[in-house]
Length: 493
Image (cartoon, rainbow, N blue to C red; front, side, top):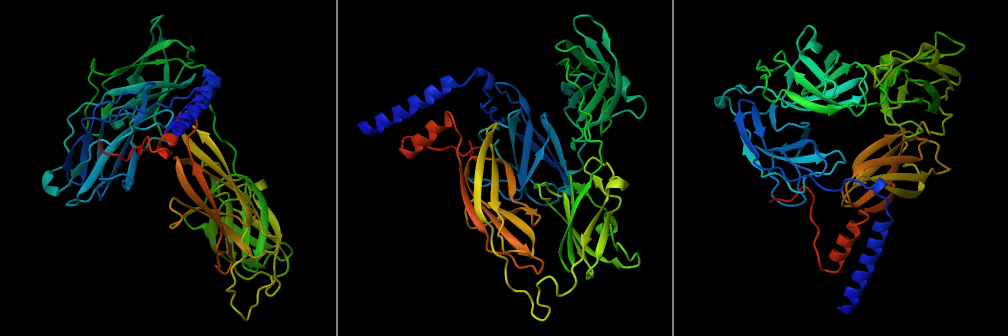
């Protein structure tokens, strides 16, 4: 026993010294928000209304996650099928549910550092039905918070989904400098496109004074989707500090076609410098014509987005074509956009490749290819901890004697038995990142897949993610039988 105590204090001493060496400038918010209390709900026709008390946090609550599904979560390790980020509100109407079906609900709070409530809110079981009637909303919306995004933009969050006036919506918002009592002119108001719940508005203002306290007031011209207006003098204001940050203009450049790689007689990979978005019929996004024979056009039989050589998801297209000839082809990308809606430039949308004639790609035309490609080697993992979550950087070496690989697939498992696909990569990729992981054990597998659909067994790497700093003490206590682990967000009160 003395040896165990001595070992424990030795480790505690190391942890204490390490903590003293950490500069306060690098301290992070590691404290969880409180658990959600007074979680209640009412079932309606194809909908449920959920309410809860506001939660406190040492820094501030950023929002809430509503979890729900068809199976109760009654023990550690289980989770709900669906999750909705409802932003920083304490009331939410969940619609498009099936009548006469029992649903189970819970909610947790989260802060800006992605810390979440330690335990689920007490679970609710609700069954929507036609006889329950439609939800009749007679509650006026309120202003939850306001925050300066930069020196010319302010984000306003409401307690529920709201509707802006059709004409001059900016006139429904008034901002005043608390010190000088002078107005800050609101130039424009529009719904936040990134907020699917419809509770956020982005205001464009005159340039703010950094650090100055402003008071925002919303007029009764703002209504919720049921037509209830904001009540004057009742939670229609919010205070925020002015920002001096410049506006992030965002991506205004279209994607660029950077490389074309022929795979075999009927496959070619086209790589872009960023993720792209294809049309409803992707075959219309590409034209492949022989460089010296304009009438020789390859038929596009299929297009699948994969990662490019830099491991950027959806930044390469694996194209299945009609059989090629031994000639040079020009690939042209048409009407392709990036995720910001920027169209590809005509001057940077084409590339050349040398076609592979049938029989020249080392395939036996008389015998179906049933041989899986050889596996890559040297799978390694680098672990980076960020704000309580983990980033795993995988790297590997391609096999030198594989020339028919068209895809590489990365799988992930939490039990080494059932693997889920995490990413589909190009044949040239040699690295991949998996982010936002919780502490625990994970298994990663990288396989090779050829154009005949044969997939290798894969190389596997086990990774153990453990929190550093004070968390080490907890792990030591468990290993000595003097403590116990707490399953975050999956325990019941």
